Length: 436
Image 1 (spheres, one colour):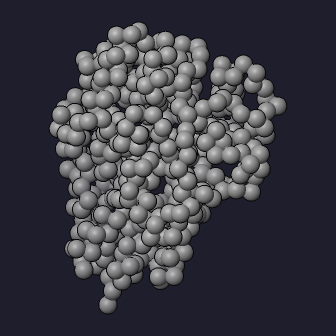
Image 2 (cartoon, rainbow, N blue to C red; image 1 turned 90 degrees about the vertical axis):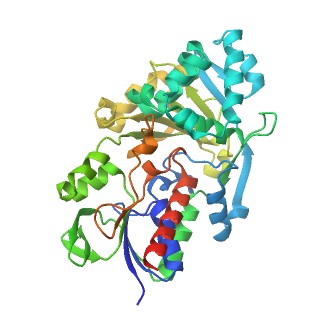
Image 3 (tube, rainbow, N blue to C red; image 1 turned 180 degrees about the horizontal axis):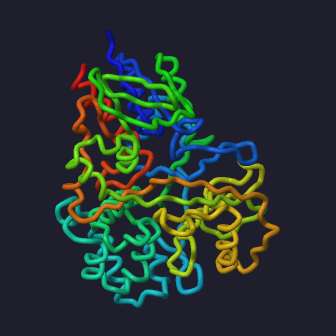
């Protein structure tokens, strides 16, 4: 008789794990809180074309995702396109991200430009986690690149991801991001190309879900798991008023979510290990405009007065003709849930954001806006302090049969589709090795 397994969460991690388990002959059921699978790769329609609720692209180093896309017959649909990166600093827009743009970046004095370039090159050629794990990014950058480089460039970018915890983040996180990003560029540092799946990344989600159903897996959508508990014959799941029991359960939510559904029945030392593992949440407002806002695909905001930290103009990367001629702009904000903006309604948040769009483009007018959409993700970016490897949540929980696989375990990589695929496949491999 084949092994039975429940997977909690039908994001890319849960879908990939389920796919590999079904391939190995397991009986799998997925329980997803939302009406559709995909998690952070969820989509909606703009101009008749699917678009991600949260911006996504691929790097050439995302080999796990690319291999899965090849297996699913979708690799030929991935386009590798040039992108343009900028930064808003000291009241104006600047090109950023290439050696030539660094030379023209006036907010940094020449000695700081040199130190910025040298430290970036150093990080791209070092492959030693231990070297960076014991120190914060703030301390390392200030020491090696200088306070001006930290305050002008890196601190605003870290605050975009980690909000009020930016100064606490390990240098290992920043090093790994620079290290991998450098490998997606040409040897000169110019000419970076990013990947996008024609028709949207939701196609991978849809294909995985279709193959799972054909393989006999059951997807329970709009079915949030309210309670996990240990039973004599396995792990119990409470979904609405129904109770299910499985010999094996793979939980793919955050550490905080695991604590919420398992409650104080978990051993105290395990709860104490998970409870400090924080993560920022994401607010993403998507604008449909009748014309471009800026000339950039990716615009970092290095100005603490702005209520958002990133402007990703999707149609400066892909043609707006795909979306019925509409220009798509993501306004990105990472924050903790005790921040007032997290509780704001869409109209309130727009009133907060609206004046700052005029700083990016003085001609901006409300008449440009054809539609607005607001999306929230409660756990989007794990906070990784120094020596985070000692705090990683374990795959096997204290309950026999209950396993945990989530973004908090992909350290030192940054969260993303590639590492969700990698984590899901690795989880399935470990379960197969344990249970056959």
